[in-house]
Length: 535
Ligand code: G4P
Image (cartoon, rainbow, N blue to C red; front, side, top):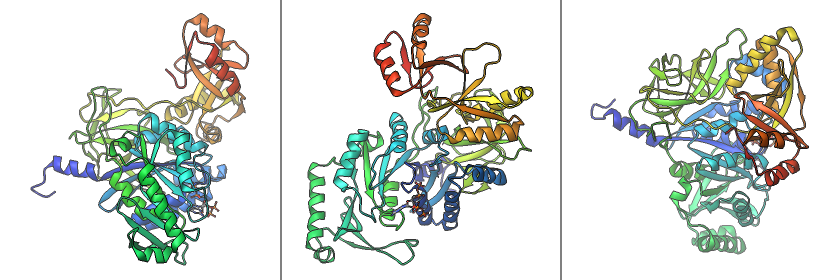
């Protein structure tokens, strides 16, 4: 360190440079492609291929399992770290396809902002909406990238008004698509007053696109675009200036207004202007709520929380990797920290950083970074690790499962292993376990956010715990936790199209057969209170 630079200067500088975000999108919107391009800009070119390799295995469960095993570390959620324009960027990668799970939701808790990626033909889709809701509840700043502009899509003005109507968030386009005879040719940057015109290169946009800059009034631009296309652009921009939402940094910070960018990840059009402006506007790590009030990232003592636990898939080792988001101070390898829930001191040995398919040892990490620490079964999701040891971060919210199945052990003599497996996998956050009302040793019911989790659990129960089982899908899908008097709960639970369960803490919840039964209960059964997640 520079002799004139104090630790608090160094910490403040590290915090100011950090940008930690996740991309939220519906499958096929282009998340893999965009991630790859961001990595290219970040100079991590060799990693782009690794991201692509993941695409190949996204559909086949068996391949996925194989890969997990061979590598001994998850590819389903890793942290991609790269530098760009003086920023240290942490892109928290979330599974985007069938292997969607509660992990995806939890990863958003560890991010400081989110990039919502939309297909220019489809706008807001189902998965986008689900993930957006999680961000909105947490008031996470959201930036929007409208992708695939290289091919004809929805009219941009209509697209943003649909986003506003659908999600209830104000849109402020920062870049706007420029068309030449109806063909996407670049973007106009409203903040900088620049037009970025692109030229395709022969390599399918694999290299940085060539950019020429002019102002909107530049007569050259009229020549390049032609009279009609130029007039259309000027019209759109005037309309946005007059009738659109003005830029408001506070509203962005509160998640009430989303800056919008247009481009094409595939051809690289608009990706660089997006990255540049996004990093300038996105928040650095902020204070996080804890039991002792907000903890500032510039607090000199290290603190962080576990947001994900991943079992090492090598069956010979029971070690797990806990993903810790650093919230304050500096983390250094081998440091002693307090595990606040148990009150015990822990040495964080062999910390790792995750770069797509590789992990590498690290010596230090700063607020906004994510480190992976070896865990021998002591850590749980939501746990706080800190040097001071006298506070806990506000809990990671639980999310309501969307699919339910009865888990039936194939071999009754392996019941103990089966129960242990279910318990450990639940602690890891792979799924939630519920029990019905029958006495004796009730058959557990497993609830997941994504369908693939059933296959993953079945595989792991058999291979890691020697407890093969099968899952019997249930038709009930809509869970609501219910509070109120015993009699009221009893009455409500026994209606038609309903099924009562208990979570592992013994809280009652009701599953509904369909949305209609759920709606009816919400309207008519006013004697009890329904909750979307465990109260
Ligand atoms: P995902 O991770 O969000 O699921 O999406 P992914 O990047 O895998 O992209 C889904 C499909 O959309 C891919 O086509 C990809 O090439 C295409 N795509 C991504 N960005 C753009 C874009 O800016 N413009 C256009 N026109 N297409 C885009 P595919 O045919 O399914 O796969 P592939 O054969 O290209 O790998």
